[in-house]
Figure 1: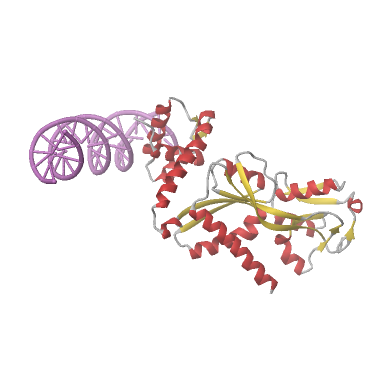
Figure 2: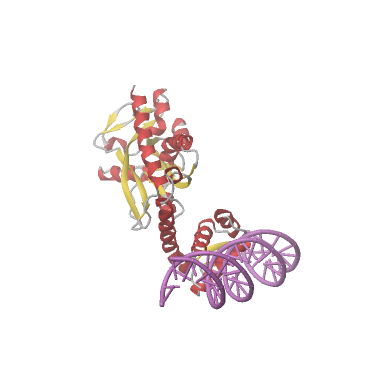
Length: 303
DNA sequence: ACGTTGCAAAACAGATAGTC
DNA sequence: GACTATCTGTTTTGCAACGT
C-alpha cells in the first residue's frame, strides 16, 4: 500500500496543531483514526515524524522535511477540486491569515469583517503577531498568507509590496520637541518608546535612523501600539508608530508630532506567501477585497 | 475478443469502548 | 489526551455472465 492523501492531511493537521485531538477535529476524524493514520504514514515512510513529549507531538527533522512537500501535494489536490467546483464554492472555507500588529489591528480586522459579511461561506481566521512571527507562521504553513511591515529575508517566503504606510514620531504635547522640525542631532539623548525586537515598525525606523547617524536610546519597548501610546502619554519619551494607529489621538491633539529632517518614514507593507504555495481563489479574493476596502476607506477619509 | 455489469469475498478505514 | 482491541460499514478485487 502507498501513502494516502488522507494520511498527508492528518500529518499536516497534527503538525499545525501539535495535538492528535485537535488535528482530528480539523480533518473530521476521530482521535484514534487520526492517530492510526499518522502511525500508518510513519510505518509507510519507515521513520518517526514527531517526537512524543507527554501529550504533545513535536515535528522532528524528518517531519519538518515532509511538511512542505505534504502541503504542496494537498494544495495541488485542493486546486484540482477548486478547478471543478462551482464559482460560489471557490470562495467557501477557512482562510488562515497572519498579520503584524498595525496591519492586523488597524486595517485587516475591519476588512475581514466586511469580507465575511459579503462572503457568508468564507471564514477568515486572523492571527495578529509581530512581523518576525508572521513570517514564521507563513513559512511553517500555519497561515496561507501574511501581511507584514518589515523586511523579509527568509528564502522560503515570496514578498510583494502591498500598501504604503507612514510612520510618525510623536510625543506628549508638553514635550519641548512637540510640533517642531528638528535635525537628527537634536534627537540625541532623547528617550524612545519603541515596539519590541522583531517588530517591523521598530526595524524600519531604527535602520533609517541609523543611516542618518541617529541611534535611538530605547528606554521602553512594548509589544502593542496601545502600550506605546500609554507610555508616551505618561511622558516616557518619543514614540514611533504607524500614523494609522494614532490618527484619533493626533486629531484630538493628545500627541505632538516631531518632524525629523531627512528621515524617511514612508514604508511599504508587504503581502507574503510561502514560495511553494500559490494563492487559493479565496485568498486571492480576500487580497483584492482588502485592497479595494483600503482604497474606499481612504476616499471616505479624504472627504 | 473485448468491454460492461453484478455479485461475493477480502481488505481497509473508521467508530466505540476501554486502558494507560 | 494517546493508544489498543474489537466491531462495523465501505471500498476494492476477482470472477463469472452477458452484450456488442
